[in-house]
Image (cartoon, rainbow, N blue to C red; front, side, top):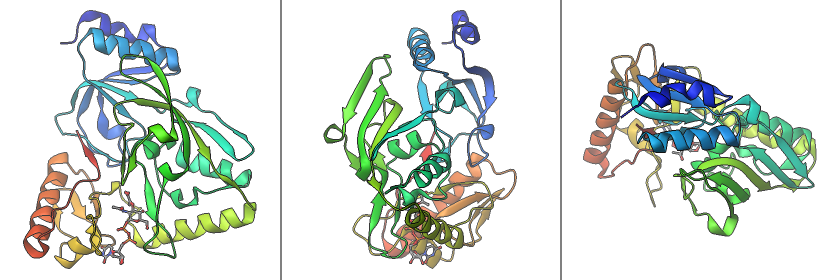
Amino acid sequence: MITEPLMDIKDIIKGRALYNEPMKKHTSFRIGGPAKIWVEPDGIDDLQSLLAAANDNGLAVLITGAGTNLLVSDDGIKGMIISMTSPGLKSIYHDDFKVSVSSTVQISEFLRFLIDHGLGGLEFLAGLPGTVGGAVAMNAGARHYAKKDMQMSVGMLVEKVKTCDFDGNKKIFSKSEIVFNYRSSSLQRLVITEIEFCLRKDDKKKIAWEYGNYLRKRMISQELSLPSAGCVFKNPDNADISAGELIDRCGLKGRRVGGALISQKHANFIVNAGGAMCSDVLALIDIAQNEVKKKFGVGLELEIKVV
Ligand code: EPU
């Protein structure tokens, strides 16, 4: 239950606090009903105050980055959304090939820094929307642009992660303490505040060239002109065939429910073609899962988070 003191949140933090805030403004899908409380902490003190307020008031907490992998219910969210996106928290610094970055930094901004400083290894993130913290929590990745069987993922280059648990305690995890799996990590029920990567010193032109290859591949094969949450399903385990190809082979490209559409360009993308509701996307998810199961006997697992 939300009690009165919570209504004073604006007074206890430096960052932004918004009430009944439409989540469609904070997700790349441009979908989602109102969050009871949406906050953007402007420092660790803010974050700790917010977590304490949520605990005191029995409010569920959801941590988000830029909301690029998120499908929010049309009914909205009753708890507190802590958005790790504040510009006040952004910092990037490097000591030789070790680079520390705050979780709130946009991936595109981080990659620009890496190219400018001749630091290679994360070029495969080119064109990916979202924050560095979100990418680490989800262990974002891509196939190598030339070697189709080679999977690249952020976790491979993580050295240390600074976090805060939901009770406000800070903890630093070294790489041996973190489990990274395909599109998931053991850092899910924590607030990631800073990440240290171990990269390689390289020629700036070479890094920019690699970056360009990944970006071109993404632009050619993926639907980037309409709002989406990227790939909706994980690629099936031990299958030679991708989720996109399975859905494509079921003839589902272009299938529409309300304002949502299975992309004509890449069948693992559902796009918001205008005014899509969460229920429209869920209906398409259902259709894709049922058709693929019927035709290939494969169960497609969601990659995006549905809340
Ligand atoms: N394909 C089809 N039809 C389609 C889509 C794909 O036949 O509609 C075929 C392609 O021709 C290709 C194969 O499926 O032979 C794989 O497609 P693609 O190279 O596009 O890779 P993917 O497995 O669909 C993965 C990641 C993407 C990442 C790309 C980078 C997953 C679920 N997806 O896609 O990540 O950008 O590799 O190459 O692992 C994301 O995580 O949101 C995401 C988009």
